[in-house]
Image (cartoon, rainbow, N blue to C red; front, top):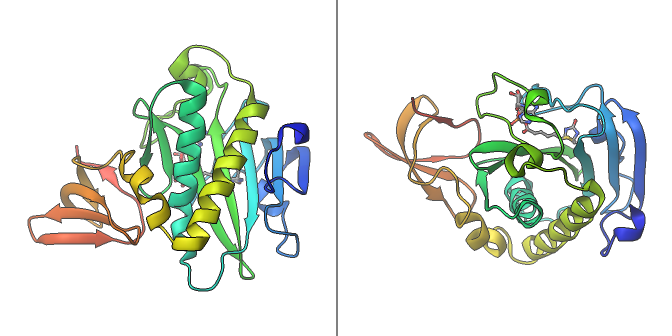
Length: 239
Ligand code: BT5
């Protein structure tokens, strides 16, 4: 895998066949761009105390250590990473990917990846899980957004190492651009892949139409009571 790396991200590169969560394999003392990868997580994490489920050896499960400069808003990193994941995934799958604000990547309406950004001592541990080779029957069922994998969408398996190398390079490029000029650096790529735009959604208990992602990363929702600018949380499609 390390031979495929083309940028600074992934140096150093930590690999364990099995771990609790890759989020805990990194420590803020390591250099920016340190990456942790595993085949199996026994305590894979989602946001808000939720779990991330992936059968051994099927997925990309990785974390990257980032040190955002003062003046930038670390919460935007989920969207920056979402764009990088979408670009890498769509190149591998040959199908356009979408970002579902704030942290999911979808192929054909199915969630194939999730991003988890956790602050740690001034650094951010950015976790990315991508479903690559799960067969439809081994994806989690009963999820709010139906789960998919590259395999379930394209009908064939995909090599994970080149996809991970591509992902780390896209992430590095988008992160460097964001360091320089904030979310504006990826806003066009993000807006072009905005899954929620134009859809009827439930946000903060209110129902409305998602109108897009603002320059500072909020989701705009037009409701009967006016325009909401949602900062964080969970967006459900209205039934
Ligand atoms: C996320 O959380 O989508 C962020 C997932 C981040 C996972 C990576 S893997 C490497 C790194 N190490 C970790 O421990 N985590 C990161 P959230 O939006 O809360 O979505 C979690 C929800 O998605 C769960 O409650 C399930 O409903 C569903 N889910 C769980 N596993 C899934 C999967 N493999 N594919 C699609 N949906 C899944």
